[in-house]
Every structure is written in C-alpha cells, then in structure tokens.
Image 1 (cartoon, rainbow, N blue to C red):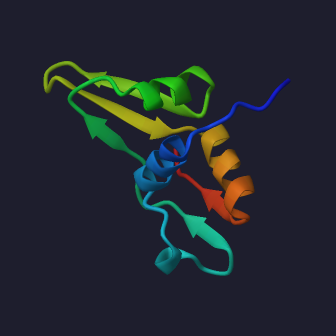
Image 2: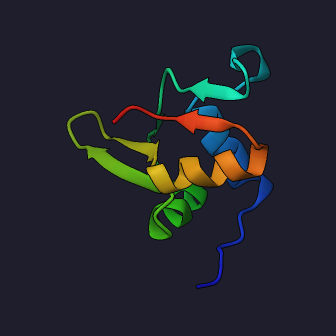
Amino acid sequence: MKEPKLSLRQIEIMRHAIGLGNEKLKKSRYDAYRNRFVTSKIDEDWEYLVSIGYATKRDFESEKQIGYYVASMGAKYLTCLFGITITIED
C-alpha cells in the first residue's frame, strides 16, 4: 500500500489540533493535552485526512459546527515524521 502524501498545511493543522510544540516535549515524548479543530465550515484538508484514516470528524448540528480530531493513524504519522513518541487519549 502506498503511503499518502500530505501537504505542509495538513501536517500543521494536525500538529496544531493536538497542541504539539517543543516546549511540551519531555524526553522525545509528547502526551497530547487536547485533540480538536472546530470550524463552522467543511475544511478540505481535514476532509482528506478523514478520507485516509488520519483524522475523524463529528458534526455538531445544534451549534452548526464541525469537529475534526487526529486519529491514531495520524498520530503514528506525526510520530514518524517528527521522530518523537506522540500519545493521544481516546
């Protein structure tokens, strides 16, 4: 199976969603304290990440918002890319 190619923006929005920053790294390990990206409209980059299994999506109809979340496969991708261990609580 061929690995999907991600744009810099797609990598950055996953990194942002989990709050990954150098100041929070401990011995090449990062425990995500959050995992969300909430928007009022569909985001094509997030939709692509959902389509390849790197993210999940939830519609909040009463608030007319969409929540995107980094999935375990997305965390594994970021782990390999950045050379650190990333954990995300479910």
